[in-house]
Length: 133
Image (cartoon, rainbow, N blue to C red):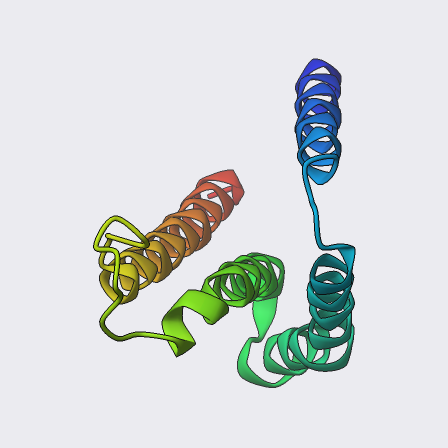
């Protein structure tokens, strides 16, 4: 398990390096800073409290962790996709944002729900097998 944590940590650091290198190409810092500040405010002021509240109110038993994790992932995916989802419509250049972002966002939410259901089912299955007869 320790090796997995180290590998995930190294992958995270590598991705942070990629993100930092992409920041060097930013020409308009004001827009980037507003976006980053808005992301922090939305996460800390809205997403995190809603996730904690939903995990507390909606879930009992040993599945609270997976549900909170799923809500966190769903909230982060929604936050990233929100600018594109809120500005639909025709564009002068058809190659700009050519994908079906609503459909892809719904697929991502479905994947989060299915993975969460599998984790919860796996926990219940292994918990049931551990009990002595």
